[in-house]
Figure (cartoon, rainbow, N blue to C red):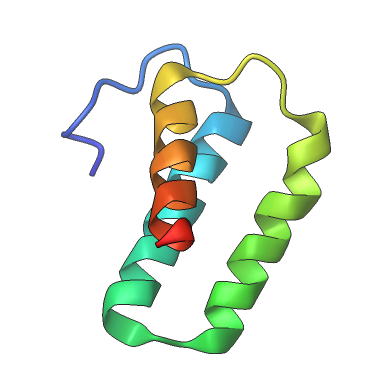
Length: 71
């Protein structure tokens, strides 16, 4: 996935968000492990209060995940 977009000027929190969202979508479509899904969402929830000025790619991935979960 690192070849899809240039990951320049991304913070560690942005990279964690991108990896977690990718893990959640992969788990939801293929593995369907409830424990992994719950833990990844818990990490995102714990990380949420400290997120400021997200990179455009990580913000877009979060919105795509919210749209995916909304359906």
